[in-house]
Length: 261
Image 1 (tube, rainbow, N blue to C red):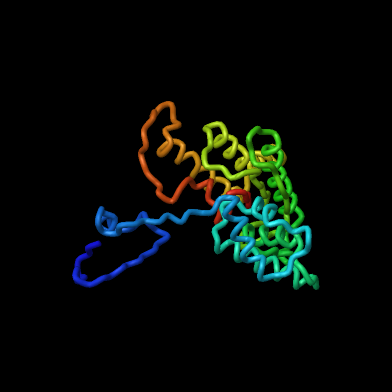
Image 2 (image 1 turned 135 degrees about the vertical axis):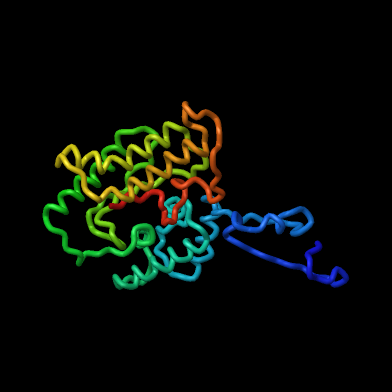
């Protein structure tokens, strides 16, 4: 390997790592610069099981805890996310006075990582709570009515994190790497289900659908400008996003499965 500024007569091995390959200078990636490139992607289910087994050896878990079941709850999680998940589950078990981590602790830890901390002391007036309830139920009903949509796991009107007054969590049954046009359209319909419910029940709209609209806009823009799914514009890619398809990313906050107001 040859790099400007280094003595070619010296035996030297240079290692470098980045989680932002899209911003690297193309000169660094030319042939002969770095002879080997190793891509470390988000682990699939098998990889998540192996990572979880490593971290779960450091804590005490009950007999019915299965790394395979925990891995099924965490599509899109990185190795660091999984380490944090085990730590969060251990903290939850400690707070309830248990001597071992249960599956419910892992489930609650996933919600805490995805949706944030519960804000039970955040007071909403009755009218706002009613709007939040119908909004989240709108997401759930549309998800239940459409084919090929991730099943609804939980609907809550307990505020979490910053600005989230309620949420609907969907959990995929398997890792997905491709999506059809119909599936993407169904995902957008689910995201807009909360706003539609507000309009049907109350006859007006609120500001609660801001995150839903952002997600729908990202999906629609990608369908048109990256995946050639527009009949008018045809099979043309107008932009690139090396980070990956926005609705397939978890984390972020992983969301991919969280519908928050």
